[in-house]
Length: 70
Image (cartoon, rainbow, N blue to C red; front, side):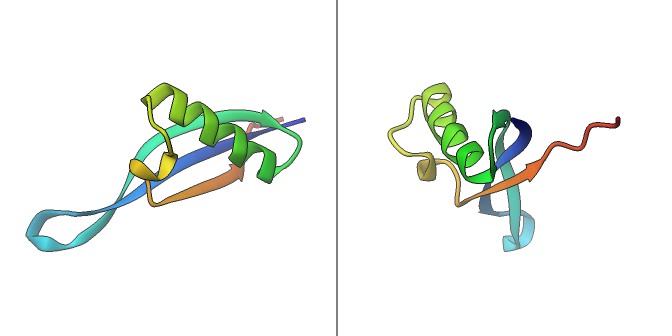
C-alpha cells in the first residue's frame, strides 16, 4: 500500500473576472494504486461534505503519490 495525496479542484471566477483554480479539499489516502485512491477519496469527500456526488463541489480530482522523505 502507498499513500496518495488527493486534491479536489474547482474553477472559479476570481478578481476582475479571471478564472482561477481553487482547492476544495485535500485528503491523504492509503491505497494500492491511484485508481483505488481516487475512489476512496471520492467516498470520503462526499461523506465529510454531506454530498451525494463529489462533482457538486469540485470540477476535477488530482491524485499523486505522497512525497515523504526517506
